[in-house]
Length: 63
Image (cartoon, rainbow, N blue to C red; front, side, top):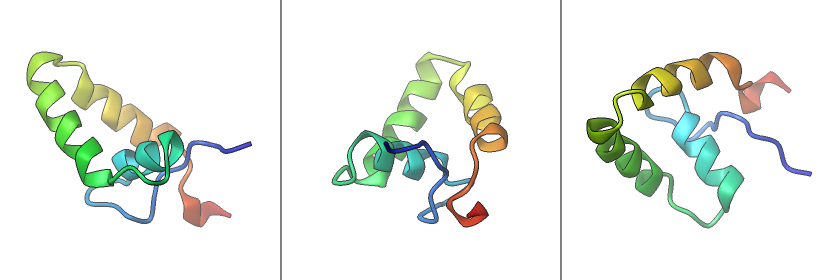
């Protein structure tokens, strides 16, 4: 069973990379990052959720 982890492939905190790997390992993390940026203009809670996820989700390096 796969678990959601922050990725080592990161720009800020690795949340988008971890989400991309969790959804499908073949998805490019850049696409998830771009979608997150675009959605944050229309849904203002997205940046807050990103910060919360960066705090709550464990890193791949924690193991």
